[in-house]
Length: 315
Image 1 (cartoon, one colour):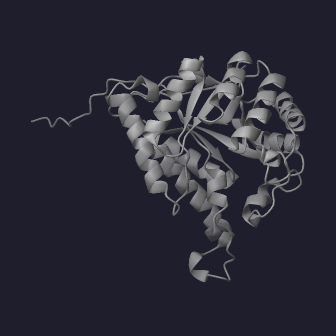
Image 2 (cartoon, one colour; image 1 turned 90 degrees about the vertical axis):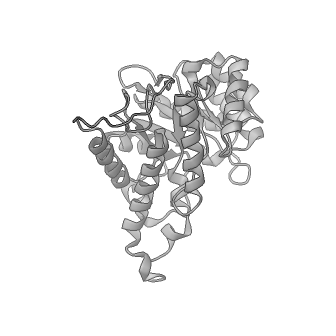
Image 3 (cartoon, one colour; image 1 turned 90 degrees about the horizontal axis):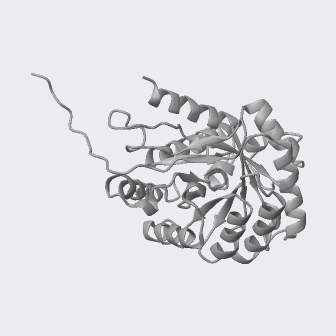
């Protein structure tokens, strides 16, 4: 007698969204089943990885995180090119750390000029990430949208407090929005509704649920992302049927466990391997929860994730 394995019936589908433009544009979304459940549905576009680049030399980074980018951390264009040419980056995420009002507080014009230089120098999709300060991000990201008109950037984080002005700029200058809410399915849905009412088209919206690394609340992040996917795929909730972006690298690499020298706590093991594995494991958890775009840092962690994706999708 043939054993028939029960399967979940899915009534929804994640929207397909194309990021960037030209030959190197990437498409994400399109899933008709839970993450990697290829025995129940389709996953036409594999998750994508964006490599981090910062607009100012990073401070306080672990040695393991700096090592792969030696000599280019003071030049965002060179850094981005190294990620593409040496490590095969299929997307770049430019973190606008210098615009933080509690840091360098760089002005909008200067920050936008850096973004334009990077955007002009690369041919892969570019994500531009602000500081989550509503007032400053409104000023900076609107200027970025203007000077990079038509380049189809992904602009984030767009939050409820600044969604009207940044969202309007994204619509006017033809960019994609990363709608960011603090780990809550209802808030995520509400912001998507607000952006839709504003006029942001469905093919220009990503969900940023706000994520964290292993040991710092990733279980709750997983639960919220899981519920978003369940609502999208089994409850036909159209306002949650969008690809998910996870800005994970900076959350992992800022933790004390990664920066702690091995001599200080030998039980944590080799400091270099520790950071790489923590980033890779955190990223894999988020992929299993429904992540479509991961923002990562270390090339070896990225290599591990690519291998895992290949294993999970091998026929």
